[in-house]
Length: 305
Image 1: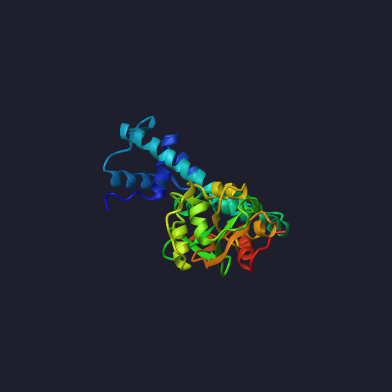
Image 2: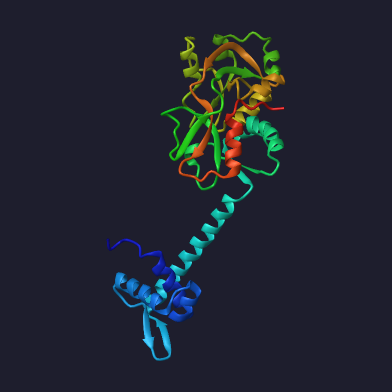
């Protein structure tokens, strides 16, 4: 095809020959004969349909087209070389980049990492927080930790492996909030007398307060009081501070509940369709740090200490 790129070998031969203005010196650098470099240049010129060099008695000189092409090819080869070197260094690196939402990273992941790091002290952890996994750049992280709902939350290029086999969702609040209202919260009064935390513009719209009430067979009406935000982490911090009631994933919040920072506002629980999962980029070379973390995360159910 006429729009296909020229072979990389031709571009490398051209870049070296243009830099030295010599086929012979380019051949020395590329470990090729002078005639082999000449053939590569001829093939490239035939492909482009125009000469790139002017042959003079005193030597080679780039044509105006050759000058422009040389600047482009040199920049692209340099960028390609730099990125290749970076990826090769990364493949051998001890660094492991984990992508997660701010809420999962701060409430769950940060509590689990000390156990992993004690078992693998040579691995350096880097955490990248991105709220929506659909916005992840696959080149920027190694593994991701997000809630996954099959066929609804399926970011392209990623394979999900559940970390928890099951999980319930409940209405939770802080003990401060519960004490303030005399521990008399019911499904009906929750909607009319209390402040419900509502996440806006979040990819996890697969479970809302209305869905939760409906699935449990509880009467639903629009809440009288709400605190809205586009960050679940912000709403969770507000909940911990005693500002209202939020939907909480019980395995994710296990430590907060065990330590008494959060308590169930109601006894009702709904099995979660979404499962906390490890996202693995497809078609990616698995480094040793990636293999170690995947084995650790999926070997059971990590418990914070």
